[in-house]
Amino acid sequence: MKPVWIVDDDQSIRWVLEKALQREQIPYRSFSNPQDVLDAFDEKQEPQVLISDIRMPRGNGIDLLQQVKAEHPNVPVIIMTAYSDLDSAVSSFQSGAFEYITKPFDLTKAIELIRRAIDESLRLQNQTKDVVDKMQETTEILGQATAMQDVFRAIGRLSQSNVTVLITGESGSGKELVAKALHKHSPRASGPFIALNTAAIPKDLLESELFGHERGAFTGAQTMRRGRFEQADGGTLFLDEIGDMPFDLQTRLLRVLSDGHFYRVGGHDPIKANVRVIAATHQNLETRVSEGLFREDLYHRLNVIRLRLPSLRERREDIPLLARHFMQTSAKSLGMDPKRLADDALEAIAKLPFPGNVRQLENLCHWLTVMAPAQVVGAQDLPPDAVVMGADLPEGISTSELITNHKVINPSDWESAVALVAKQLLQNGTREVFSVLETKFERAILVAALEVTRGRRVEAAERLGIGRNTITRKLQELEIDI
Image 1 (spheres, one colour):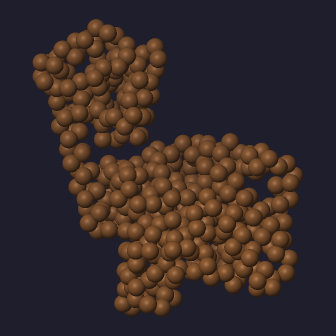
Image 2: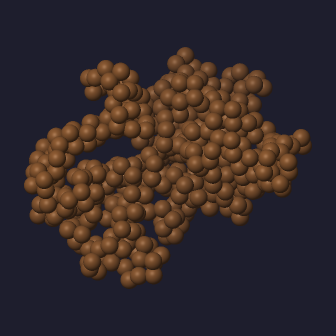
Image 3: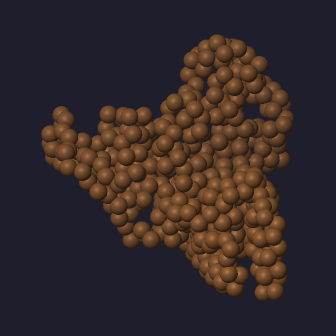
């Protein structure tokens, strides 16, 4: 069993609890301040139960409670304090405390409370394991990498919760799949799951999509229409690319999240919707807030629990598993016999960077299912644009010329790859080869810099060693959309 953690700046309190736990043969660990506890969590350690004082010189027990419940919701937290005021009690329970006790406390009752908390912790762990096992059996999300197992555990821990969740991750990493899993394994599973990509709807139509409209509310509104919030009543509303939501609509969304009421466009009667909101974005919302593009109060309302999805580059060990799965599903959807990926094809695919993540891998498998000539797909069957760092190559460059001994050219040997492309262009009689390659080089470098700096132009220019005006001009010339 994992130890019980005790957090109190009062050494005498720690000593009393330590001796009591020792008599009960319950392992323990003591801390004198919250920061040491957070450091221990960062080292991937976790207690069975956490007992914390509220007022300490180097931190606050309520703040510690909120951080622990946000990142480790299965850990029961018992709050203790010598100041038995209403505000402390209310704050403790609102923040998710298992129980609240005042000093001086009856030691026997304190141990009974700790044992109850241990039982609750074990129950939640077993419940989480059951959900994770069920998810892997139903293959709704595949992944054996450590980063994905952490995502599975988080979904399991949230299985009995209706809390708002913010999912972050690169485009194509599977954020909607995670949202669906959170819904499927929640108390709202029998209700509807409604998804809306806020970046895909024109600004003037998005309000109506979200909240609906009354007949005659605007030109073309010939009938009353229920919006996504009404459609998701009793279930889950998934708002994808929330970072792109127009600022004025963010205000309306905040109001709905605060009190659950909204108005249809052109309507005067408030409508109540019992909806759990799960939001997702590939953007850095903290940066959007600092730039004045996203409301800070809405950010905090959405950022109750955050799940970060790893990119495919961070879970390369999952690529063969995913590739085989997508080859099967692609064949089934097309009514074809599934093709098999040879070892050299899997080895080549596993080395690709996949800027489009899992979605790009799925598309590649779909392409291979349709276009590969044989039932066994080899490295030579990969499409030309799937090699050499995933760059778009000039027409006429074949896959076989870019694969040596069935291996994709190592990105560290990019000069050889460029030389190979240049040689092929020259042999094919292409004109202005230098200009063609220079444009592609500049585009690749700028896109990479903007990806690393999360779209911040000034920082990208500084990192590249070019001027701010230069990067702005290049982005316009190359038509790069950040």
